[in-house]
Amino acid sequence: MKDKWYYMVNNDHDLLRSIFSRMPEETLPSGFQTEMLQQIRKEAVRISKRNERLHLLALIAGTMFTIGMTVAAFMYVGIPLIIIEFPHISIPPSYIFFGLLVLVLLFSDQILRLIYHKRYTG
Image 1 (cartoon, helix red, strand yellow):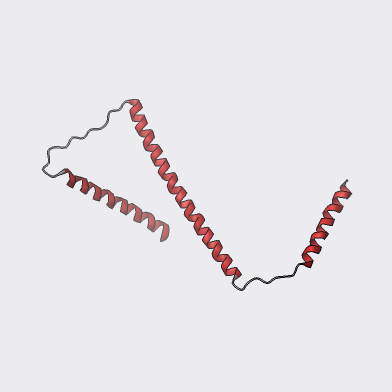
Image 2 (cartoon, rainbow, N blue to C red):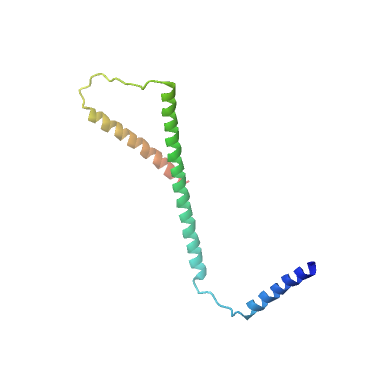
């Protein structure tokens, strides 16, 4: 049984060798290596972007899960909602809203700039 298997493997090897020896040798185009490396780089960038999107999606999903679980825990335990009373102010509430919005945007801009500098400069 072993001799028959050995003969089949060696016979296939000889058959493949004879087929490949009959094939004509072809030369590759002059820019083949450059084009191949560019395609590899493009694929690497595509995979990197996909991974970055997946990480962002996981971050958003984790944040939403955490917020949802916190709200559910507060509702289960029965902690009342926090009510903040402001004294009477002669400033219209829209000014307060826009002021808080500017602070939030400035804070998020600073965080995004720090992330950018960590990732691309250092």
